[in-house]
Length: 205
Image 1 (tube, rainbow, N blue to C red):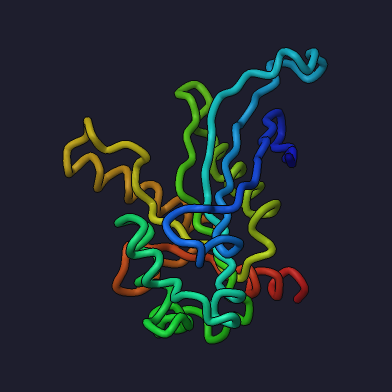
Image 2 (spheres, rainbow, N blue to C red; image 1 turned 45 degrees about the vertical axis):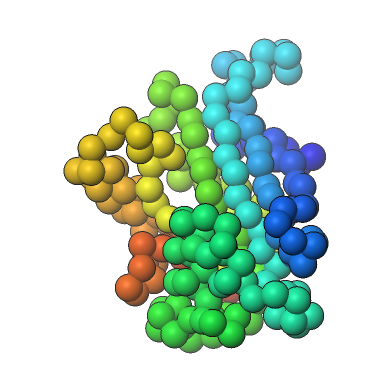
């Protein structure tokens, strides 16, 4: 269990290796799930932490996948669900290497591990003021830096009660938020990505 401090918010995240579908993905796909807690006052007792949200992500150890020739990450992602299929098709080519579209944004990313942010949910009273962006940044800083790339499909967590225009409007706002964090849209897709290798180079320079 890791605890991530985010201002007066704390994120607790657990890690669990995937055992789904086939034995081939064991050890290569890791589910990351966590809860977001809020402390009403700085000097409050730890028992007063209030859960105000949750998040989930996937850490794909694609470098090991390709090196061991165990299975092809794009095909695996497309079989999981539609959203992961979008990520797989945008990020990888059919041979498991980076796609041409991704490489048009960054010429070279040596680390093939990918963090896919799936969901981030905050209660109504804890949204706004850039809080979700700060929490996403803390998640990336803690569980993302074994990876070379972070990927996300910026759509609402639940769209059942939304019209098509509402989904489009919210998705555009989410995309703008990720763009403000340095993410770039992979050409020809709805997937946004962030190269952690190039971010690290920027901070050094």
